[in-house]
Image (cartoon, rainbow, N blue to C red; front, side, top):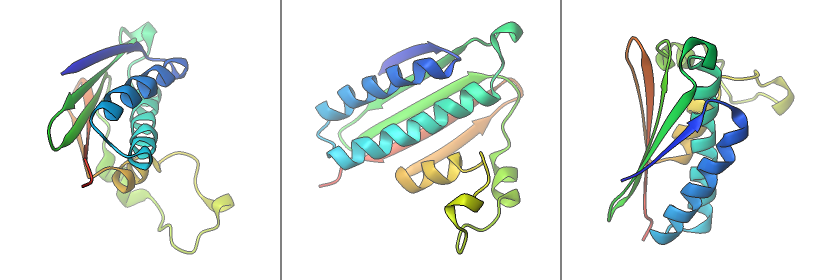
Length: 140
């Protein structure tokens, strides 16, 4: 397992993307899969920055774990803060079919993107933290 801890600020998300690129390249992921994973991980980190506890509240770090395996990779993005109820965001979101890009709501599409780009997405929230667990399998 490879662990990374970044400040809860958008300026540091690029570091996570670069780290992911290096690990995924060694696991023989295709360029397209790596780019998909980078987008999904960026969304998870952005959610952690936006919805996690701020530095003033004592939650200034985001923990990222990369767990490579023969089958692929699991990436866990964890932040401290109030629970994120992703099921509610899915039921409150409008249907995306037939909507022009300009009509899309700002925010709220991160979970959709993660699910579209990764093989498995799990969001686990407790009273004080949220974990987004992203899994991608190596294509044969």
